[in-house]
Image (cartoon, rainbow over all chains, first blue to last red):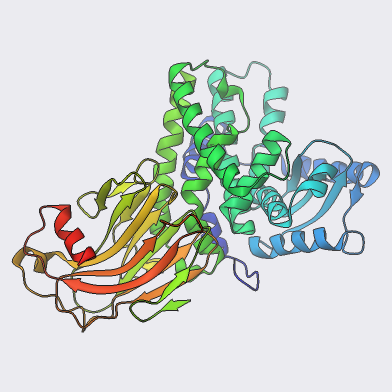
Length: 286
Length: 177
């Protein structure tokens, strides 16, 4: 990680967007029309309502209240480099989860208290970075859950397209998380805790475990695709790990300074990741 | 940390992934390659004729000229190692394939070829080729992952001459020579 936490250029950050997501965005435009798929004013009103709810039901994290957590958050904002404007909130919950609501460059992140209690600072960098990734890539422009819930008679093929994009968007957001935490081990640690609920497991064991589990999952998918995974909004955790594992070196090179990052080189790696994940999706959808 | 002299080494234990970049600006047709031996004793070679695989053994892959920043002009080849765990040794090599074909010496000494090895924490180690040996194949660095304590990156600078490359053993003879 760059010692001064300098930001990657926005153009370079855009190059981290998963190419499969870019392709699906094109399909969504053709199928649904111009993006955003939500009215600008309605989106702004939603964020304002969300802000009111958070101020009422959660606790805003400030430098005075939780200086260490706030410092991590500020560092992530700086590394993401997108002139973003938002607040961080915490709410009591024993589960490890975080979410973001955004409108344009404004946003609010909500994290659960268990996550602040049990995640190491570098893992928090990953979590905050992931949520900021959704803002940077303007994923809020396609409110998948709202469209699925609010559109009667939406053809299954259109729903599949939106959910496939949602999964690809998570891969893009993970890359910003990795950019912010600067180490695959931290990103994997955060995913592991989220999936298992277990803190305190050695990093090497976590990495080995994910690698073995991805291999097992890949075999299982080929052996027994149930045709139901298209309903997921997020990719399966070992698949998210694999996508990060293969991209990690290039993203870390970018985090350390743009001189070590080659856009052309990364595109080659990204194409391979896209091929691997698309093949799994195809089997799953069959 | 820079490894400018032959024999200098850095303990870089704990890393699981590496990105190797070889750069040069002088007029030469150099290629980056990696010979390896895994912990079961299996040997192999990743080079322009066998690019490797990021997601399957040997979990390393060579890509062509990436030209950092896409500015062009500078020559650069990159090797990504996505999983080092199963490797015992990785030998990072540079050769001039045209010279290897006809058995003539390459101009390593007059070149500015250098190698940078970045680990998965973002630490970069620059390794300079430090040899006056004549040859058309140069071993620049060795990743020694044989110890359970952790890996070492060693400036191994040495060169040898091949006339044609048909067997991996020809390279191993230079590496072990």
